[in-house]
Structure formats: C-alpha cells, structure tokens
Amino acid sequence: MSEVNAALKSTSIKIDSDRIAFNIIAYIVLGSFALLCVLPFYIIIVASFTNEQTIMREGYSFFIRNFSTEGYKIILKNPATISRAYLNTICITIIGTAISVFFVSMCGYVLQKRDFPWRRGFMLIFYFTMLFNGGLTPYYILCTRYLGFKNQFYSLILPQAFSVWNMIIAKNFMRTIPEEIPESAKIDGAGEFLIFIRLILPLAIPLLATLGLFTALAYWNDWYNCMLFIDKTNMFTLQYFLQEMLNSIENLRIVAEKSGLIVPVLPSESMKMAMTIVVTGPIILVYPFLQRYFIKGLTIGAVKG
Image 1 (tube, rainbow, N blue to C red):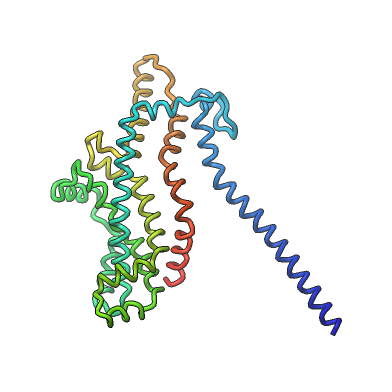
Image 2: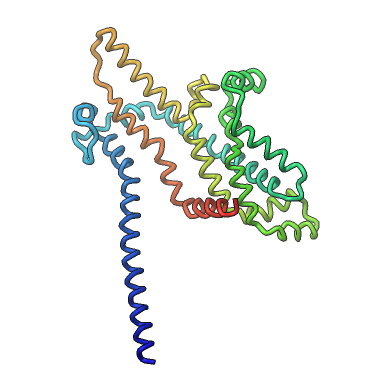
C-alpha cells in the first residue's frame, strides 16, 4: 500500500512540475506575441514626438530623438474644426452602431427560427450580396439621385447599417439560446417583438458587445462614404478631415518642388503618426471594457456555426 501511495505521490509531483513548466513556456510565448503586437504602436508614439528631419534622416527609432510636437500642433491648430469633426464621428458612430446592432441581431434571430418558412430564400439573397454588387457608379447614382444622400448625415450611417457578416454571427449565436424560452413566453401571450426585446436581447449581451465593437470600428474608421457624399467642411468626419489635411500638405510640397519655391519643411511623417494616435486613442480606451464580451461572443458564435 505504501508503494502505491509513493507511486501516486511521485506521479502527482511529476504532473505538477509538467504543468508549471508548461505554464512558464506558455507565458513566455504569449508575452512575446503580446510584445510584438504592442511594439508597432509604441514606435508610432515615439515617431509622433520626433523631429521631422530626424525621421527623414535616421528613420524610425525605439527612443525619442530631437523631441518635437509639430505634428500635433498642426493637427490641433484649429481646435474648433477638429472638435467638430470629432463630434461628427462620435455621433455617427453611436447612432449607427445602435441601429446596426439592433437590426442585425433581430434579423439573425428571425433567420435562425426553424418555423420561419422563407428563411432559406432570404439567406440566399444575403449570401448573394456578399459575392456580387452593382459597382460604384450605379451605387453612387442610386444614393445621390434617388435616395438624397448628398450632404446628409444619414448618408454616413445608412450605407453601413447592415452587415451580412455580422448577421451570420448573430444567427449562429441565436442558435445557442434554448427554444423553450421563446416558446414559454408565447404560451404566456407574449408577441415576437416583445420576446426579442425582453428575453432574447438580455441573453445576447456577449453578441451585442461583439457586434457593437465590430460596427463601431467600421463607423469610426470610415472615410469613404464621407468622400463620396459630403462636400461641406462642417460635416466632415475625423478620419476624412485628417486625410484632407495630410493631402493638402503633400500637395503643397509637390507644388513647391515643381515651382522651385522655398517653403518650410512640413512634418508630414510625424503628422501621420500623430494622426494615428488621435484617431485610435478612443478605441483603445473603450476596448478593455468590451474585451471579455468580445471573446465570449466570438467563441459562442463560432462553436455553433
């Protein structure tokens, strides 16, 4: 009996040592990958505070050399304009994300219901739109001539208000919710819309957080629709405003080179890095609060696909 206990004890010690060794290796590997992911952003921060001539002469570095804030000064030279662009982007992101998440999740809930007779036909139509589109010219004519998208805020919201890919994620997630829940609510006299609002959405918090993050990133980073439909400066989004500023500096440099004019060296490289910090800052601050829901929503939606 003592020999058996000794063998079990030695086996347990070996398992514990193996687990410790595995954890050490896993932490080292994951820490290295995390460091590699953070490293580019760190270099961007360093470059945004580095003198333009130093960047052009010596390239990017891990440490700040010849500290300069010229890039930020140019971006923030007109605080009222950039504040308006920030406000436009925030409003569009919040409104568009709320609309998109609600309708995408509702569509996914309906299309996963087995008693919905037309779900296969609708899914075929949705899949078709993922593979084919009418092209840019018909799209632009439809939006500007018939839908009145020109210089309207809803032109920055509606084009991205529905994502088929997000709908598929929502559809797969909704399958994990037991069918007995809506059926019991129907027995009590609840309608489909009430069931969706009062029962399904509270159970789909991980899904809503995941879709919200995806959609918010898409709205926050969008500049293409602003380029197509918006001409008024006071309606520019943050990304398009900063891009126009950078294009203006680049065009000024090209004109100066061709005409032989002597102009001061404009911090285009450090300005690009500063623009990256200004644009991605709010997303970085929001992501930690949604991370746990984001991971859970992805895994549940993927397992039941």
